Length: 483
Ligand code: GLU
Image 1 (tube, rainbow, N blue to C red):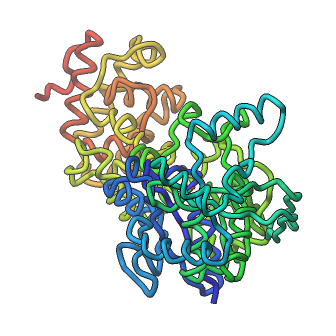
Image 2 (tube, rainbow, N blue to C red):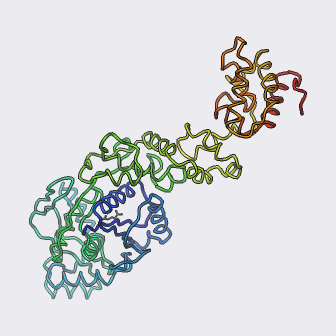
Image 3 (tube, helix red, strand yellow):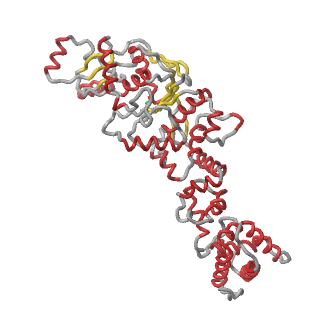
């Protein structure tokens, strides 16, 4: 059975790039009827936290992704946090020591730093020079006597390392490209390259899908799998998420966290759709895809290895499409948190519907709903519609037409608008000359929700009273005699 894993380090919130890795793993696991494992790589105790872990899991769930095993649901390979797997790493390290494939290294950080500096200065790749590789028992005893605490280093085979990558084909590292590397630090904690391999092996991971930034680590991992006698999993190193300037997507390109997009009012299905499309073209030119549709159409074999360049406009476009694709009731529910000043109003669903065509994110909602609030003093083009006799006459007569009807629904508002049209039918007026003054009278703006929405949401009394106030500011007497 296919078993994949998503292995976040809880040292920050969930990054879009990591979310993309999680998505690819999830899509692959679900399409194959396999298992998705969530493993928390929290060996960096100083930078990891349970709060960050919880926020990552929460954002993954929000995206619609789930897993079959993980720290929150246990499973056959519990524990799923690396910080709780120390004993498993210790046993595996011991196996390598006993087989002569790992040795204690007494070099100090300063000594290592110095040889790295020399290598770089000479234009060589800084790999471990092997100072402690062949120490005699007596030499080791001397180092111990000096109080040096050893790290444990893997005796990397000298030959070529190669592995099959589903996206990149055969990947080779020439002999000598990988030096002996540390698998257990001098403080006794296991190093990243070691924990990943021990976990992937003991958790029965069959496919490792991760970013291409791990390619050189994979050379080390393949060696460790071999040394420990475990089968090497199938690899797929996908391209990285880049900013528009070609550098790895980071803060300076804008928001990078899933949580940030969530808080700005992007929909999870728009994000997963967007992240998938960055490296994959769906069949039949269907671009707007919910997670289940993605799952049906996506094939990991069709991923592109080209860089994935973040394009906010495309994400915005997709988000708008997904907003307009949602069931209105569901949308209104989602929208409530973004417009707390409006969501308690029984007419909130109509308000949301009225601006839906213009929305990019739910975060835009309050700005689009402003026309339903107190009218503003018209300026610029809006003010121009209110100049002159005609506008005042139109507003005054529209008030009269409205006096004779009820406006309790959109249908009522449509009827009123039809009546107003009819009323002015034999006048030589363009539709705009009738409806723009009414719109500006109701809101102070020359754009916003459709007039029928404005009338329906504001209701008859509020609409008429706004129109009266407009007439007053236009210097007209109150023609309807109301209020
Ligand atoms: N914990 C690693 C990271 O967050 C992932 C390691 C892996 O996928 O092998 O980059």
